[in-house]
Length: 163
Image (cartoon, rainbow, N blue to C red; front, side):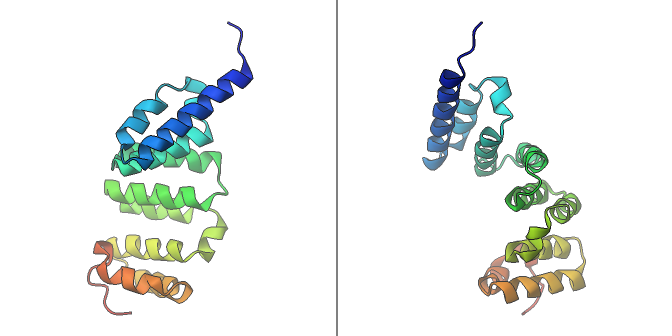
């Protein structure tokens, strides 16, 4: 069969737009179904994986989402957002130690982000490492004071005390 790259690219683009539209409508399960129509070699492309991850997270399919995020971390090791999402998904599966390790394996630019310190504080607190958790929470709040309010209602930081 002769392949027509421009036509194939158009089909992939249309499918990704449709899947994104389903997500925007709050129908992430339909987005996942839409993505299955992509040719296999395009299902593992970065753009498709990004849409898939968003849909899986919206569906709270944490195991699948953690695997998709892990693939994105491998494809784009310099992209901090993928490491944040991978860690979050792992934490939601109940594997908080793996979440912590995944986050710490990310690019060094993560250390400059308040959300990195906040999420790490959540994971460390869950793991019973109170001193380190408080230190990272303090760093997050110093970088972005909106995390103070977030920490007050975050179930992962219950009992950490006033900062």
